[in-house]
Length: 130
Image (cartoon, rainbow, N blue to C red):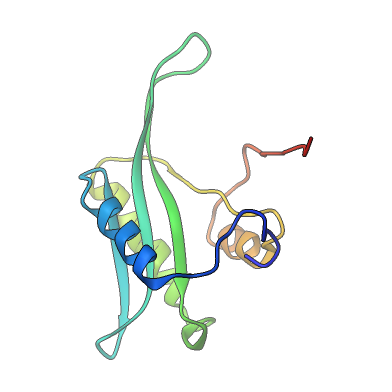
């Protein structure tokens, strides 16, 4: 987040809680939580995205992995991998054949993690400040 201060706001717990309550009240969204010793140590936020058919693309529904985080003390212990595996199992259970995600270009750690877990790049997003 420090790489994009013009985009990200400082953390506000009350706003974050309200955001998650709104998101998770929609039937097309869900979250999976990783627990270690009955303590939440990570989560994934998942959203069903339906792309309508158009003259160039077929209609498709994907599971978007919108957010994934693991608390710093639990990183590099396999928690993230378990969350990815749980996401894959969830997608299969609801007959979704593709999981999509995006990550910030300067977040090299995320890119390495996702590639290590089988994700491939297929679309790049760019911007130009004017």
